[in-house]
Length: 65
Image (tube, rainbow, N blue to C red):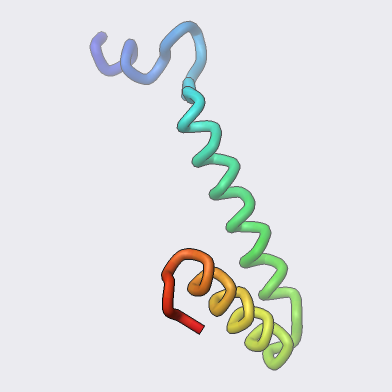
């Protein structure tokens, strides 16, 4: 019964703490971004993807332009 207790805590099938909820929200946002890119024509999607990548690189890593 250890496995069942580990999966079902407080009557919930997949209990998420604060960190789990934040990670789940980030995953859903990333899925929405991917869906948004795939809904565009190839050229437009490529330009958007490169601009978002450049922005994230500039924010996360210093010295990247």
